Length: 442
Ligand code: SAH
Ligand code: SF4
Ligand code: F3S
Image 1 (cartoon, rainbow, N blue to C red):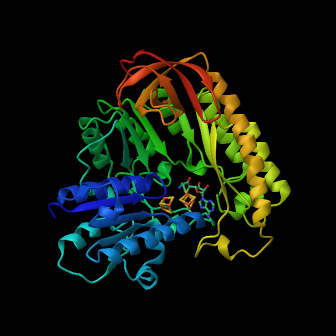
Image 2 (cartoon, rainbow, N blue to C red):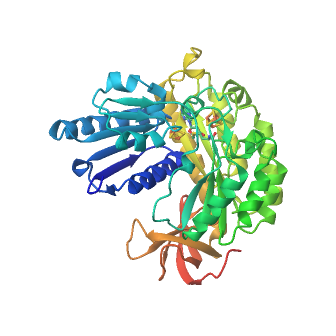
Image 3 (cartoon, helix red, strand yellow):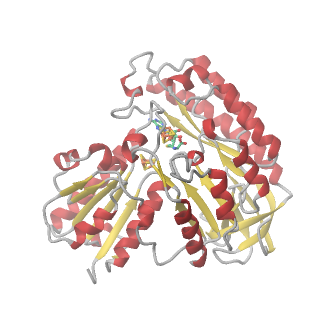
Protein backbone atom coordinates (compact mmCIF):
# COMPACT_ATOMS: atom_id res chain seq x y z
CA UNK A 1 0.00 0.00 0.00
CA UNK A 2 3.07 2.26 0.06
CA UNK A 3 2.40 5.52 -1.74
CA UNK A 4 -1.37 5.02 -1.57
CA UNK A 5 -3.41 7.91 -0.25
CA UNK A 6 -6.75 8.02 1.48
CA UNK A 7 -9.36 10.66 2.17
CA UNK A 8 -11.79 10.14 5.01
CA UNK A 9 -14.95 12.18 5.71
CA UNK A 10 -16.76 11.75 9.00
CA UNK A 11 -20.42 12.57 9.65
CA UNK A 12 -22.49 12.25 12.80
CA UNK A 13 -21.58 11.98 16.44
CA UNK A 14 -18.51 11.42 18.61
CA UNK A 15 -18.84 7.65 18.14
CA UNK A 16 -18.20 8.12 14.46
CA UNK A 17 -15.31 10.49 15.16
CA UNK A 18 -13.83 7.83 17.40
CA UNK A 19 -14.40 5.09 14.82
CA UNK A 20 -12.82 7.27 12.13
CA UNK A 21 -9.70 7.70 14.24
CA UNK A 22 -9.40 3.92 14.42
CA UNK A 23 -9.92 3.63 10.67
CA UNK A 24 -7.07 6.10 10.28
CA UNK A 25 -4.91 4.06 12.67
CA UNK A 26 -5.65 0.95 10.63
CA UNK A 27 -4.95 2.67 7.30
CA UNK A 28 -1.67 4.10 8.60
CA UNK A 29 -0.67 0.60 9.72
CA UNK A 30 -1.36 -0.60 6.18
CA UNK A 31 0.91 2.16 4.82
CA UNK A 32 -1.69 4.62 3.57
CA UNK A 33 -1.10 8.37 3.90
CA UNK A 34 -3.85 10.91 4.41
CA UNK A 35 -4.54 13.51 1.71
CA UNK A 36 -6.63 16.66 1.84
CA UNK A 37 -8.56 16.31 -1.41
CA UNK A 38 -10.83 13.37 -2.23
CA UNK A 39 -10.10 14.07 -5.92
CA UNK A 40 -6.47 13.00 -5.28
CA UNK A 41 -7.15 9.94 -3.14
CA UNK A 42 -6.71 6.29 -4.09
CA UNK A 43 -9.15 5.37 -1.35
CA UNK A 44 -12.21 7.42 -0.39
CA UNK A 45 -13.84 6.53 2.91
CA UNK A 46 -17.18 7.95 4.05
CA UNK A 47 -18.04 7.29 7.68
CA UNK A 48 -21.76 7.90 7.63
CA UNK A 49 -24.62 8.93 9.91
CA UNK A 50 -28.35 8.49 9.53
CA UNK A 51 -29.72 10.15 12.64
CA UNK A 52 -31.91 12.59 10.71
CA UNK A 53 -33.02 12.96 7.11
CA UNK A 54 -30.63 15.89 6.64
CA UNK A 55 -27.73 13.50 7.33
CA UNK A 56 -28.94 11.19 4.56
CA UNK A 57 -29.25 14.05 2.11
CA UNK A 58 -25.74 15.32 2.80
CA UNK A 59 -24.47 11.86 2.12
CA UNK A 60 -26.24 11.56 -1.20
CA UNK A 61 -24.31 14.64 -2.36
CA UNK A 62 -21.03 13.10 -1.20
CA UNK A 63 -21.80 9.84 -2.98
CA UNK A 64 -22.55 11.81 -6.15
CA UNK A 65 -19.09 13.41 -5.91
CA UNK A 66 -17.44 10.06 -5.26
CA UNK A 67 -19.14 8.62 -8.34
CA UNK A 68 -17.55 11.40 -10.42
CA UNK A 69 -14.07 10.63 -9.08
CA UNK A 70 -14.58 6.96 -9.87
CA UNK A 71 -15.71 7.72 -13.40
CA UNK A 72 -12.53 9.73 -13.95
CA UNK A 73 -10.26 7.21 -12.21
CA UNK A 74 -11.94 3.78 -12.03
CA UNK A 75 -9.13 2.36 -9.85
CA UNK A 76 -10.26 4.54 -6.91
CA UNK A 77 -11.68 2.44 -4.06
CA UNK A 78 -14.85 3.76 -2.41
CA UNK A 79 -15.57 2.53 1.11
CA UNK A 80 -18.73 3.43 3.02
CA UNK A 81 -18.91 2.73 6.75
CA UNK A 82 -21.08 3.82 9.67
CA UNK A 83 -24.73 3.99 10.56
CA UNK A 84 -26.21 4.87 7.17
CA UNK A 85 -24.45 1.90 5.58
CA UNK A 86 -25.66 -0.32 8.41
CA UNK A 87 -29.25 0.83 8.03
CA UNK A 88 -29.30 -0.07 4.32
CA UNK A 89 -27.02 -3.12 4.39
CA UNK A 90 -26.84 -4.79 0.95
CA UNK A 91 -29.21 -2.17 -0.42
CA UNK A 92 -26.21 0.19 -0.48
CA UNK A 93 -24.94 -1.74 -3.52
CA UNK A 94 -28.34 -1.78 -5.22
CA UNK A 95 -28.66 1.96 -4.89
CA UNK A 96 -25.02 2.85 -5.39
CA UNK A 97 -23.40 0.09 -7.47
CA UNK A 98 -20.09 2.00 -7.62
CA UNK A 99 -19.44 1.40 -3.89
CA UNK A 100 -16.65 -1.17 -3.37
CA UNK A 101 -16.99 -2.02 0.29
CA UNK A 102 -19.66 -1.19 2.85
CA UNK A 103 -19.54 -1.97 6.56
CA UNK A 104 -21.41 -1.11 9.72
CA UNK A 105 -20.02 0.28 12.99
CA UNK A 106 -19.42 -3.26 14.29
CA UNK A 107 -17.28 -4.25 11.29
CA UNK A 108 -14.73 -1.50 10.89
CA UNK A 109 -11.90 -4.06 10.72
CA UNK A 110 -13.39 -5.34 7.46
CA UNK A 111 -12.17 -2.20 5.73
CA UNK A 112 -8.59 -3.37 6.35
CA UNK A 113 -9.46 -6.96 5.35
CA UNK A 114 -10.93 -5.74 2.08
CA UNK A 115 -7.89 -3.63 1.26
CA UNK A 116 -5.41 -6.46 1.79
CA UNK A 117 -7.47 -9.08 -0.01
CA UNK A 118 -7.26 -9.71 -3.76
CA UNK A 119 -11.00 -9.60 -4.13
CA UNK A 120 -12.40 -7.03 -6.47
CA UNK A 121 -16.00 -8.00 -5.83
CA UNK A 122 -18.07 -5.50 -3.85
CA UNK A 123 -18.55 -6.68 -0.29
CA UNK A 124 -20.80 -5.72 2.62
CA UNK A 125 -20.25 -6.44 6.33
CA UNK A 126 -23.00 -5.80 8.82
CA UNK A 127 -22.62 -8.09 11.85
CA UNK A 128 -22.19 -6.68 15.34
CA UNK A 129 -19.06 -8.02 16.93
CA UNK A 130 -15.96 -6.58 18.49
CA UNK A 131 -15.08 -3.10 19.58
CA UNK A 132 -13.71 -0.61 17.13
CA UNK A 133 -11.47 0.43 20.02
CA UNK A 134 -9.54 -2.85 19.65
CA UNK A 135 -8.12 -1.61 16.33
CA UNK A 136 -4.80 0.29 16.19
CA UNK A 137 -4.68 3.88 17.43
CA UNK A 138 -3.51 6.74 15.27
CA UNK A 139 0.17 7.62 15.45
CA UNK A 140 -0.54 11.11 16.75
CA UNK A 141 -2.78 11.89 19.69
CA UNK A 142 -4.07 15.31 20.61
CA UNK A 143 -4.55 16.46 24.19
CA UNK A 144 -8.20 15.39 24.04
CA UNK A 145 -9.05 11.77 23.38
CA UNK A 146 -12.17 9.64 22.94
CA UNK A 147 -12.37 6.38 24.83
CA UNK A 148 -15.04 3.85 23.86
CA UNK A 149 -16.58 2.10 26.87
CA UNK A 150 -19.53 0.36 25.25
CA UNK A 151 -21.19 -0.19 21.91
CA UNK A 152 -24.88 -0.30 21.04
CA UNK A 153 -28.00 0.75 22.87
CA UNK A 154 -30.71 -1.24 24.66
CA UNK A 155 -33.17 1.64 24.86
CA UNK A 156 -36.13 1.73 22.55
CA UNK A 157 -36.63 5.46 21.99
CA UNK A 158 -39.34 5.38 19.37
CA UNK A 159 -37.78 8.03 17.09
CA UNK A 160 -34.24 6.69 17.08
CA UNK A 161 -32.39 4.70 14.44
CA UNK A 162 -29.31 4.06 16.60
CA UNK A 163 -30.38 0.75 18.24
CA UNK A 164 -30.71 -0.74 14.75
CA UNK A 165 -27.44 0.74 13.46
CA UNK A 166 -25.28 0.02 16.51
CA UNK A 167 -26.92 -3.12 17.86
CA UNK A 168 -27.44 -4.34 21.43
CA UNK A 169 -25.43 -2.75 24.20
CA UNK A 170 -22.17 -4.49 25.07
CA UNK A 171 -19.75 -3.13 27.67
CA UNK A 172 -16.05 -3.25 26.99
CA UNK A 173 -14.00 -5.07 29.65
CA UNK A 174 -13.14 -2.77 32.58
CA UNK A 175 -9.40 -3.43 32.52
CA UNK A 176 -9.15 -2.85 28.76
CA UNK A 177 -10.65 0.62 29.22
CA UNK A 178 -8.30 1.53 32.07
CA UNK A 179 -5.33 0.23 30.09
CA UNK A 180 -6.38 2.32 27.10
CA UNK A 181 -6.62 5.40 29.33
CA UNK A 182 -3.00 4.75 30.38
CA UNK A 183 -1.92 4.38 26.76
CA UNK A 184 -3.73 7.58 25.78
CA UNK A 185 -1.98 9.60 28.49
CA UNK A 186 1.38 8.07 27.50
CA UNK A 187 0.65 9.45 24.01
CA UNK A 188 -0.04 12.93 25.33
CA UNK A 189 -3.77 12.98 26.13
CA UNK A 190 -4.77 14.89 29.26
CA UNK A 191 -8.52 15.05 28.66
CA UNK A 192 -10.47 11.84 28.11
CA UNK A 193 -14.12 11.58 27.05
CA UNK A 194 -15.74 8.22 27.74
CA UNK A 195 -18.13 7.26 24.95
CA UNK A 196 -21.27 5.16 24.91
CA UNK A 197 -24.90 5.58 23.84
CA UNK A 198 -25.92 5.23 27.47
CA UNK A 199 -22.76 5.46 29.54
CA UNK A 200 -24.36 5.01 32.92
CA UNK A 201 -25.69 1.58 32.13
CA UNK A 202 -22.04 0.56 31.67
CA UNK A 203 -20.98 -2.74 33.20
CA UNK A 204 -24.35 -4.33 33.93
CA UNK A 205 -23.69 -6.98 31.31
CA UNK A 206 -20.17 -7.80 32.50
CA UNK A 207 -20.00 -11.32 33.93
CA UNK A 208 -18.98 -12.62 36.40
CA UNK A 209 -17.84 -9.20 37.71
CA UNK A 210 -20.52 -6.62 37.25
CA UNK A 211 -19.05 -3.14 37.33
CA UNK A 212 -20.69 0.24 37.60
CA UNK A 213 -20.05 3.39 35.64
CA UNK A 214 -19.09 5.20 38.86
CA UNK A 215 -16.39 2.57 39.50
CA UNK A 216 -15.09 3.10 35.99
CA UNK A 217 -14.91 6.86 36.53
CA UNK A 218 -12.86 6.29 39.69
CA UNK A 219 -10.46 3.91 37.93
CA UNK A 220 -9.86 6.24 34.98
CA UNK A 221 -9.52 9.24 37.30
CA UNK A 222 -6.75 7.35 39.11
CA UNK A 223 -4.70 7.01 35.90
CA UNK A 224 -1.67 9.32 36.01
CA UNK A 225 -1.97 12.23 33.61
CA UNK A 226 -5.76 12.31 33.30
CA UNK A 227 -6.43 15.97 34.12
CA UNK A 228 -9.97 16.06 32.75
CA UNK A 229 -12.51 13.30 32.52
CA UNK A 230 -15.80 13.65 30.62
CA UNK A 231 -18.46 11.26 29.35
CA UNK A 232 -21.31 11.27 26.87
CA UNK A 233 -24.17 10.54 26.95
CA UNK A 234 -25.87 9.53 30.16
CA UNK A 235 -29.56 8.60 29.97
CA UNK A 236 -31.64 10.51 32.56
CA UNK A 237 -33.34 7.25 33.62
CA UNK A 238 -29.99 5.82 34.77
CA UNK A 239 -28.35 8.94 36.20
CA UNK A 240 -27.70 7.90 39.78
CA UNK A 241 -26.31 9.55 42.91
CA UNK A 242 -22.99 7.65 42.70
CA UNK A 243 -22.18 9.22 39.33
CA UNK A 244 -23.11 12.69 40.57
CA UNK A 245 -20.95 12.09 43.64
CA UNK A 246 -18.04 11.17 41.36
CA UNK A 247 -18.11 14.73 40.01
CA UNK A 248 -17.65 16.01 43.56
CA UNK A 249 -15.09 13.48 44.74
CA UNK A 250 -12.86 12.84 41.73
CA UNK A 251 -10.56 15.70 40.76
CA UNK A 252 -10.57 15.03 37.02
CA UNK A 253 -14.32 14.62 36.49
CA UNK A 254 -15.44 17.89 34.92
CA UNK A 255 -18.23 20.21 36.06
CA UNK A 256 -20.43 19.46 33.08
CA UNK A 257 -23.28 17.02 32.53
CA UNK A 258 -25.00 16.52 29.19
CA UNK A 259 -28.44 15.18 30.11
CA UNK A 260 -30.60 14.65 27.02
CA UNK A 261 -34.16 15.78 27.74
CA UNK A 262 -35.91 15.37 24.33
CA UNK A 263 -39.23 16.84 25.55
CA UNK A 264 -40.67 18.61 28.59
CA UNK A 265 -44.06 16.95 28.18
CA UNK A 266 -44.64 13.69 30.03
CA UNK A 267 -47.14 12.64 27.38
CA UNK A 268 -44.58 13.08 24.59
CA UNK A 269 -41.81 11.50 26.65
CA UNK A 270 -44.03 8.46 26.99
CA UNK A 271 -44.70 8.31 23.27
CA UNK A 272 -40.94 8.63 22.76
CA UNK A 273 -40.43 5.69 25.19
CA UNK A 274 -37.90 7.67 27.21
CA UNK A 275 -39.11 5.94 30.42
CA UNK A 276 -38.95 9.07 32.59
CA UNK A 277 -41.45 11.84 33.17
CA UNK A 278 -41.02 15.60 33.26
CA UNK A 279 -40.93 15.40 37.08
CA UNK A 280 -38.31 12.64 37.15
CA UNK A 281 -36.10 14.68 34.85
CA UNK A 282 -36.46 17.76 37.05
CA UNK A 283 -35.71 15.66 40.11
CA UNK A 284 -32.43 14.52 38.51
CA UNK A 285 -31.55 18.13 37.76
CA UNK A 286 -32.25 19.06 41.39
CA UNK A 287 -29.97 16.25 42.54
CA UNK A 288 -27.21 17.56 40.28
CA UNK A 289 -27.67 21.17 41.35
CA UNK A 290 -27.62 20.24 45.02
CA UNK A 291 -24.31 18.41 44.73
CA UNK A 292 -22.76 20.62 42.04
CA UNK A 293 -24.30 24.10 42.12
CA UNK A 294 -21.84 25.47 39.57
CA UNK A 295 -21.93 22.61 37.06
CA UNK A 296 -23.03 23.22 33.49
CA UNK A 297 -25.99 21.21 32.32
CA UNK A 298 -26.61 20.85 28.60
CA UNK A 299 -29.22 18.87 26.71
CA UNK A 300 -30.78 17.64 23.46
CA UNK A 301 -34.37 18.51 22.54
CA UNK A 302 -36.61 17.31 19.72
CA UNK A 303 -39.57 19.43 18.59
CA UNK A 304 -42.44 18.38 16.37
CA UNK A 305 -42.65 14.76 17.53
CA UNK A 306 -45.93 13.16 16.27
CA UNK A 307 -48.78 14.26 18.53
CA UNK A 308 -46.91 17.24 20.02
CA UNK A 309 -49.50 19.97 20.64
CA UNK A 310 -48.79 23.63 21.31
CA UNK A 311 -49.30 22.89 25.02
CA UNK A 312 -46.79 20.02 24.96
CA UNK A 313 -44.32 22.31 23.28
CA UNK A 314 -44.91 25.04 25.86
CA UNK A 315 -44.12 22.49 28.57
CA UNK A 316 -40.73 22.02 26.92
CA UNK A 317 -40.14 25.77 26.80
CA UNK A 318 -41.18 26.07 30.41
CA UNK A 319 -38.80 23.31 31.48
CA UNK A 320 -35.92 24.97 29.62
CA UNK A 321 -36.67 28.18 31.55
CA UNK A 322 -36.89 26.32 34.83
CA UNK A 323 -33.65 24.37 34.44
CA UNK A 324 -31.65 27.12 32.78
CA UNK A 325 -29.51 24.96 30.51
CA UNK A 326 -26.00 26.12 29.68
CA UNK A 327 -26.64 25.00 26.13
CA UNK A 328 -28.90 22.75 24.10
CA UNK A 329 -28.87 21.00 20.76
CA UNK A 330 -32.32 21.39 19.25
CA UNK A 331 -33.68 19.24 16.43
CA UNK A 332 -36.84 19.08 14.39
CA UNK A 333 -38.19 15.54 14.58
CA UNK A 334 -37.24 13.54 11.51
CA UNK A 335 -38.99 10.22 10.78
CA UNK A 336 -36.44 7.42 10.43
CA UNK A 337 -36.89 4.17 8.54
CA UNK A 338 -37.95 1.17 10.62
CA UNK A 339 -38.56 3.15 13.80
CA UNK A 340 -41.75 2.98 15.81
CA UNK A 341 -42.45 6.72 15.60
CA UNK A 342 -42.24 6.68 11.81
CA UNK A 343 -45.34 4.44 11.80
CA UNK A 344 -47.29 6.86 14.02
CA UNK A 345 -49.93 8.48 11.89
CA UNK A 346 -51.52 10.58 14.61
CA UNK A 347 -51.53 14.37 14.55
CA UNK A 348 -48.33 14.84 12.65
CA UNK A 349 -46.81 18.27 13.18
CA UNK A 350 -46.41 20.15 9.90
CA UNK A 351 -42.96 21.30 8.79
CA UNK A 352 -43.85 24.96 9.05
CA UNK A 353 -45.24 24.58 12.52
CA UNK A 354 -42.20 22.56 13.64
CA UNK A 355 -39.77 25.12 12.29
CA UNK A 356 -41.72 27.92 13.92
CA UNK A 357 -41.55 26.03 17.24
CA UNK A 358 -37.84 25.35 16.99
CA UNK A 359 -37.28 29.06 16.28
CA UNK A 360 -39.08 29.98 19.48
CA UNK A 361 -37.25 27.30 21.44
CA UNK A 362 -33.83 28.42 20.20
CA UNK A 363 -34.58 31.95 21.39
CA UNK A 364 -35.28 30.70 24.90
CA UNK A 365 -32.27 28.36 24.87
CA UNK A 366 -29.97 31.21 23.81
CA UNK A 367 -31.36 33.58 26.41
CA UNK A 368 -31.01 31.11 29.30
CA UNK A 369 -27.56 30.01 28.12
CA UNK A 370 -26.44 33.65 28.00
CA UNK A 371 -27.81 34.28 31.49
CA UNK A 372 -26.01 31.20 32.80
CA UNK A 373 -22.76 32.18 31.08
CA UNK A 374 -22.68 35.51 32.94
CA UNK A 375 -21.60 33.65 36.08
CA UNK A 376 -18.18 33.10 34.49
CA UNK A 377 -17.46 36.77 33.80
CA UNK A 378 -14.85 38.06 36.25
CA UNK A 379 -13.66 34.55 37.12
CA UNK A 380 -10.35 32.85 36.36
CA UNK A 381 -10.89 29.51 34.66
CA UNK A 382 -8.58 26.70 33.58
CA UNK A 383 -8.65 26.38 29.81
CA UNK A 384 -7.27 23.48 27.79
CA UNK A 385 -5.82 25.03 24.64
CA UNK A 386 -7.02 23.58 21.32
CA UNK A 387 -5.43 25.93 18.76
CA UNK A 388 -5.97 29.29 17.08
CA UNK A 389 -9.37 30.95 17.44
CA UNK A 390 -11.64 30.29 14.46
CA UNK A 391 -12.79 33.88 14.24
CA UNK A 392 -9.51 35.67 14.96
CA UNK A 393 -6.29 33.72 14.27
CA UNK A 394 -4.26 36.11 16.43
CA UNK A 395 -6.10 34.71 19.45
CA UNK A 396 -6.38 31.21 20.89
CA UNK A 397 -9.27 28.84 21.47
CA UNK A 398 -9.83 26.28 24.19
CA UNK A 399 -12.35 24.81 26.59
CA UNK A 400 -13.14 25.21 30.25
CA UNK A 401 -13.95 22.30 32.55
CA UNK A 402 -17.59 23.40 32.15
CA UNK A 403 -17.15 22.64 28.44
CA UNK A 404 -17.50 26.27 27.42
CA UNK A 405 -15.50 27.34 24.38
CA UNK A 406 -13.18 30.26 25.19
CA UNK A 407 -11.46 32.65 22.78
CA UNK A 408 -8.56 34.42 24.45
CA UNK A 409 -5.35 36.31 23.92
CA UNK A 410 -2.07 35.01 25.26
CA UNK A 411 0.81 32.72 24.38
CA UNK A 412 0.28 28.99 24.65
CA UNK A 413 0.51 25.74 22.71
CA UNK A 414 -2.27 23.27 21.94
CA UNK A 415 -2.49 20.90 24.91
CA UNK A 416 -1.41 23.51 27.47
CA UNK A 417 -3.65 24.23 30.43
CA UNK A 418 -3.77 27.97 31.00
CA UNK A 419 -5.62 30.21 33.42
CA UNK A 420 -7.85 32.69 31.58
CA UNK A 421 -9.53 35.72 33.16
CA UNK A 422 -12.96 35.83 31.60
CA UNK A 423 -14.18 39.27 30.61
CA UNK A 424 -17.19 38.59 28.36
CA UNK A 425 -19.72 35.90 27.53
CA UNK A 426 -22.12 35.08 24.69
CA UNK A 427 -24.64 32.24 24.78
CA UNK A 428 -22.10 29.85 23.24
CA UNK A 429 -18.63 31.13 24.14
CA UNK A 430 -16.51 33.11 26.56
CA UNK A 431 -13.61 35.46 25.95
CA UNK A 432 -10.72 36.68 28.02
CA UNK A 433 -6.95 36.95 28.60
CA UNK A 434 -4.56 34.19 29.58
CA UNK A 435 -2.59 35.01 32.69
CA UNK A 436 -0.39 31.99 33.35
CA UNK A 437 0.11 28.29 32.77
CA UNK A 438 -2.00 26.22 35.12
CA UNK A 439 0.05 23.58 36.88
CA UNK A 440 -2.69 21.01 37.35
CA UNK A 441 -6.40 20.55 37.35
CA UNK A 442 -8.56 21.89 40.14
N1 SAH B 1 -27.54 8.13 22.76
C1 SAH B 1 -27.55 9.49 22.86
C2 SAH B 1 -27.58 10.28 21.57
C3 SAH B 1 -28.43 9.88 20.48
S1 SAH B 1 -28.46 10.81 19.02
C4 SAH B 1 -28.66 9.86 23.77
O1 SAH B 1 -29.59 9.14 23.98
O2 SAH B 1 -28.56 10.95 24.29
C5 SAH B 1 -28.33 12.49 19.51
C6 SAH B 1 -29.60 13.25 19.52
O3 SAH B 1 -30.22 13.28 18.25
C7 SAH B 1 -30.68 12.70 20.43
O4 SAH B 1 -30.46 13.03 21.76
C8 SAH B 1 -31.93 13.34 19.87
O5 SAH B 1 -32.18 14.58 20.47
C9 SAH B 1 -31.59 13.54 18.40
N2 SAH B 1 -32.35 12.62 17.56
C10 SAH B 1 -32.28 11.28 17.53
N3 SAH B 1 -33.16 10.77 16.63
C11 SAH B 1 -33.81 11.83 16.08
C12 SAH B 1 -34.84 11.96 15.10
N4 SAH B 1 -35.40 10.90 14.54
N5 SAH B 1 -35.27 13.21 14.79
C13 SAH B 1 -34.73 14.30 15.38
N6 SAH B 1 -33.76 14.23 16.31
C14 SAH B 1 -33.29 13.02 16.65
FE1 SF4 C 1 -31.28 6.56 20.59
FE2 SF4 C 1 -32.53 6.53 22.88
FE3 SF4 C 1 -30.50 4.88 22.51
FE4 SF4 C 1 -30.05 7.49 22.73
S1 SF4 C 1 -30.88 6.15 24.35
S2 SF4 C 1 -29.19 6.12 21.20
S3 SF4 C 1 -31.83 8.39 21.77
S4 SF4 C 1 -32.45 4.81 21.45
FE1 F3S D 1 -23.93 8.68 15.72
FE2 F3S D 1 -25.30 9.23 13.55
FE3 F3S D 1 -24.82 6.75 14.18
S1 F3S D 1 -25.44 10.28 15.47
S2 F3S D 1 -24.62 6.69 16.40
S3 F3S D 1 -23.31 8.29 13.65
S4 F3S D 1 -26.71 7.53 13.33
